[in-house]
Amino acid sequence: MNIEISFCLKTVLKQPGELVGSVCLDKGRPRVTEYSELGAELAERRAEDGRLLFCAGSIANHLYSLSFLESFCDASFHLPYHRASKKIPHVAADGSLVKPTSPNGIKLEQFVFDVFDRSKNFYIWEVKREDEFSPLKNAESAGKDCLSTCRTDLALLNKKWLKKAGARIKTEPVYLSCSLSYCGEGLERFKDQEVSGPLLQ
Image (cartoon, rainbow, N blue to C red; front, top):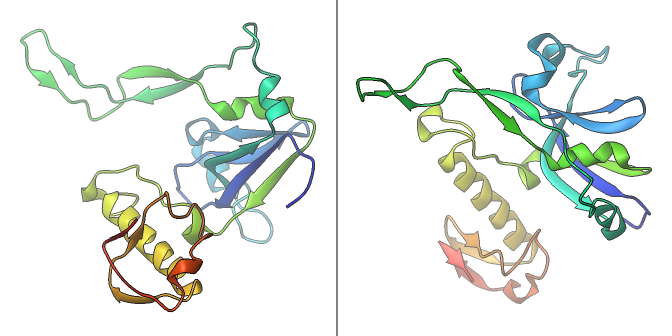
């Protein structure tokens, strides 16, 4: 990709009920609306083709031009706050630990994506979920978006990269150290090699 832009925002096709922000245009400017701010009705609304109306799920993978980032290096610039309702454990008057089952507190959050509306030119890039997004959001008991699903997805991705480079996989799972490759590049040395897991460094 060789285009002059302020930033590039990677997205995946959002799934119903998925807890990720939605990329949208607000008066012609890009923004990410957090799932907690979109509301259930809008989050589930469908377009005429059957896809979610807000289908571009933000995966928080952004590419910025240096000049765009430098434009925020000013003490007068402040990101806005977003309100998030949270379940906050606390100690009761009798000294017992209380773990609430519904939100009992407010957390104020700031997000780097709130600089997007200051951009003059931007690019929204829909990527393949299996290549770029496997979030760790839940405890193992949830069975999704948890440590075991992340491990499985990463092993499958690394295996795909190695096979594309011409390697033969002897034992699985096999994981690649981040120092070897960021997105499948630079793996030529494994061509016609037999590799074994769990970790290649």
